[in-house]
Figure 1 (cartoon, rainbow, N blue to C red):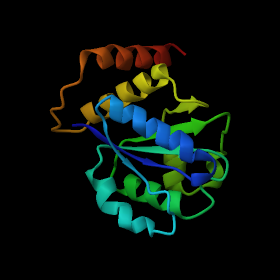
Figure 2: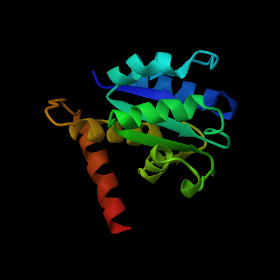
Figure 3: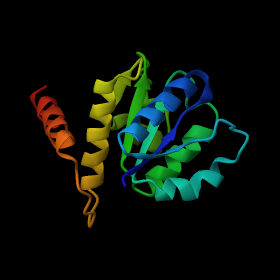
Figure 4: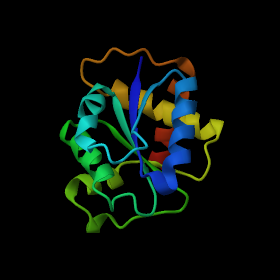
Length: 160
């Protein structure tokens, strides 16, 4: 089963992260959701991040201010995990004001969402499968309904 680790800052992204995790689970993606209790040392999440095929970061105002989320992003980046940013609402951070691993995250093709719809979940699932399919030696079977979404998204990016 394909898996994803989701990191987020509790305020304002907890509900969005939980909803996304639930919907991805419904689509047969094993989800590791960062704990709500951020008093836990983020380094304790390293084994879980290592297990996940893909790393998803929900990004909103203030996401990178405490050390917790940047610490998990930095570790996923050091492992060369496929990273998918999910921007909450209209938030657009200035990449140049962050360390290189955050700039890398912000440079990735991501999703802007204000609510979790079935259409956006299908697009994220397609992206997860596409990223996992790029991992050398991985022989994951991509469900047919996500192959089309993955290619149609890439084609539309090339056209823009």
